Image (cartoon, rainbow, N blue to C red; front, side, top):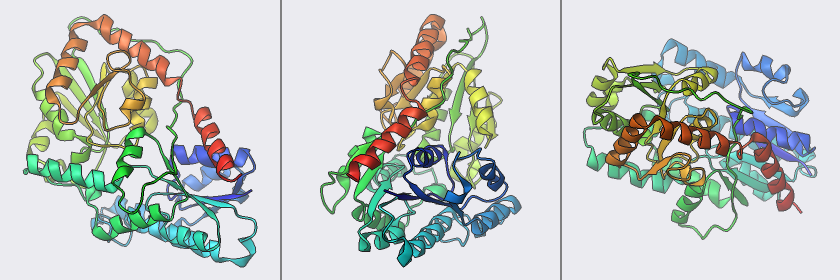
Amino acid sequence: MKIIISHPHGNQNTSKTVSALYKNNLLKVFWTTIAFPNIFNILKKKTYNVDFKKIKLKPFKEFLRKIFIYLKFKKMYINDNSSFSVNAIYKDLDLKVSKYLKRNEIKNNVHGIYTYEDCALESFTIARKKNIKTFYDLTSPYWRLKKKIIEEELKIHPDLTLSSLEIMSSKKCANKDREIFLSDNIIVASSFSAKSLELYPERTLQNISIIPYGTDTPKEINFKRRKINEKFKILFVGRPVISKGIHYLVEILNKLDFPWEVEIAGNIPEKPIMISEKIHKFFKDERCKFLGQIPYHEVKNKMKNNHAFLFPSLFEGFGQVILESMSAGLPLITTTNTGGNDLINHGKNGYLTSIRDVNSSKNILFNLFNDEELRLSIAENSFLNSKNYSWKNYEKNIQNLILNKNT
């Protein structure tokens, strides 16, 4: 039994999936686009911990995309139709994998292909013709639900503008539907994403598996007590865009009547003023530190040195930053649309609110500010609960899925 897997950028959950397949002698080959200098990490087995012979690289187009980003040639990558957009990179890799699948010499020793949203259409089409099983990892909620929420939001806040990262063309949405249609098995990371697929119009989907991501939780952690008269430090990690609820974060913080400061880690192609004048103004507030994109290890350090994590996102396939904040012992406030329902026992190891519920988030922050023992109790419970979501468990669940679906 051999599985092909493909993903353009090889994120953390992908690397664990590749690792799980390799450890169990299930990996035929891993296709990716990873550009320099990450190739050297692959050669040193730092990224995937697999034999380099099992990895096929198509790095050139992604390499050029990063150059255009560095040079700020936005027209080359800013939207889906750009020659070097993220969407173009996904499609290019998908086409390459489909050509690989067409080869006669591999048809008898490949049993499945595992790939991701927006990177499956061409390769799944060929796989179906060759009776190769298809495993589709849907990393975000189903597009019809996302579109519905975004349209509602723009009616509520007509002063807001979508980032280019949030715009979904009709062609891209149609391709997503076709990918789902061609999927024998669909993998999502949360019950929220699974439920969103009820909006899929073609048929009732029966082949959905929920496999939550993991995190690297340390054995123990020092919980820092907030000092008397110290400002309450709040962290947000994610793109400062409408779908992440950045405007609600601004609204929540502007309602607080105690000393606070916020750090916002995330980046978008546009300047904040192009999204919202209010957000632009807020980012200039001396209490707000807009960090832009920062490395993963810096994010983890920020989580250890803040007092609460505020994540009022309108939708997430699985808020990985939620799990990471829990593993850092950071009390969390998020919405029911982030996968938080699967992780959080409200009031015990974190807090859940409905989307757009500004007052509930404000009141929770007020309670955490005024009751340090409560904040530390939530932090400890959050940390302990994160231990249930290890990458080892994730790999085991992926392994079991593949084996069970191929028997």
